[in-house]
Image 1 (cartoon, rainbow, N blue to C red):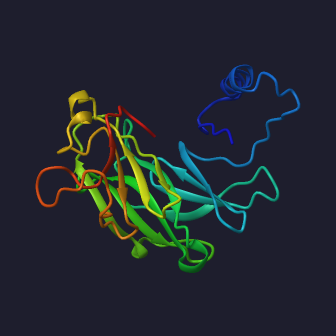
Image 2: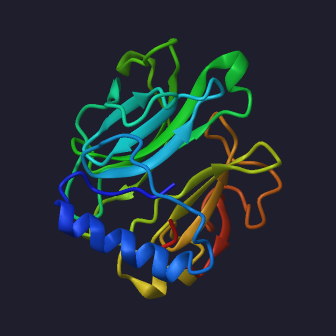
Image 3: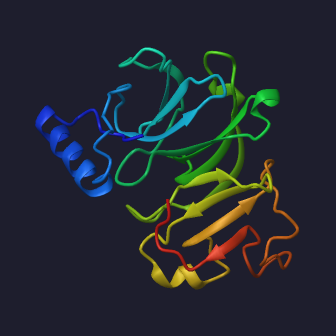
Length: 220
């Protein structure tokens, strides 16, 4: 799936399409490009089990689209409030709970303006939408101090744990510091607690026990 910013004009879109096909699909002349849906500064996509598509927008809106007939205009699925939306901050990624079919849970990672921290929150699917009052904050980052390099890749592993990538916030030395979460991949249980088998767990103080891998710059 190729995602374009809705702000692109037709000539800019054509250039992006040409670049994509020339550089990434040079031997796939049988492929075609079809517009599926529009969004304002899209950051991530996630298909629901029923085939509908969730589209994250940097400003905090999540749209939902039925892709059986395209192009389509997504309706609002969820509007997350108080998102800090500037530079590389905003609503960045989403992951469905492996048991989504039974519990309806999904997780998002976004920058929260009032606290000036990134939040990893759980929400609940309500059929055709979700609601802000279902939010459960399971983890928060340290204070925002930079314009950029916040990472933001979120996924579940085969082990059922949540993996979240965190950038170095332009502080390269922090990536190798196990007392800092910057420049790391962290691993959490679904409730935000720390798995006992994380590789750098050392109890209170010392290392950040969430850390699963370190020494990265801006993974997302």
